[in-house]
Length: 415
Image (spheres, one colour):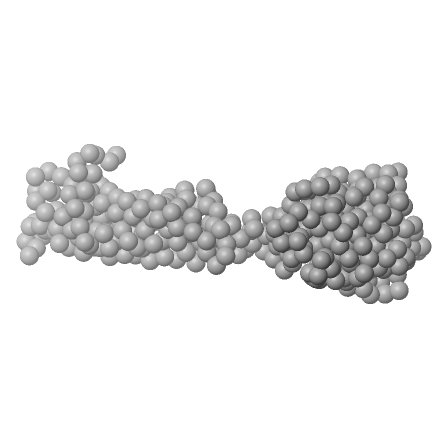
């Protein structure tokens, strides 16, 4: 049991050699602070990737023809929540596929389906011209699937699609390039010479790492086909599953439906492949977990170095205080008293250094590191501090044991 006297003597020893004690604590401070900060960077990176994927849509599945460009989840044309794969060369996605996918009897775990066709356009408004990164012809379900919110105006409706109305919804990037600070709602913009009235302005979504999700124009599928792309197959079809837990079921249902509409025989090779958002998110989380673990392991090495520093200083301390140990033993101090004194001193050095390291790690985690906003993981704080204390105890045991084994007569003779 640790006695108050042992703590008092240990503190006295630490204060007696302030500079040496401070340098010893510095090793533990760096170790603990590094673990907290690097794990926070790994956690922040993982969270950023997760947020980016989730920002592309909720429970998304995207179907794209193989032989055309396969688009992974993207903000504009063709991006989708979970991606239903790519059809083989020569295959196509048609209105019949969309109708079949909307059949609740065949696809009970699918809640929304949006066909997508893309066009490359130049937008012109009162002499100002701009080429959006993405021009999407689709249906109103696209807004729900991709989780787009409106800052102003409204999204086009099923009536607009049915009546081939030339209306459009634009992102912030397009609005700023065409209208500056002016209100775009109600104005007519020419897209490759065809007039579309702007009825909605999307809220900012930012980038997904490679694409500006606000550099997009969306319009009714029928109006886009009438004026820009012509009628035929779709570039892709975006599908929303009922919930994250239902994405795999929805994927299986969509696969079976497409195999039927594409007349793929049992055991035959599918002319499409499926990638869903849940799989993408899971893969990214696994990769980031390994990354975070490696960062923590690298930082933990400094804790080991700090522990070795504690042992080194405690050995020096035992040597310097040999006569003191002899006097204490001569007046009745037990081996446990001597050992406790030096173990407590080693643990205090580690604990104080660890506490300062926790403070440094928490403060340091408020700063952006290489574009990543760190997120402190609670477990890393307790783990780092706990390891620091245990390290101090472990590396303090040998010097303390060595001090406790000294014979009083030999200690008193030491010069």
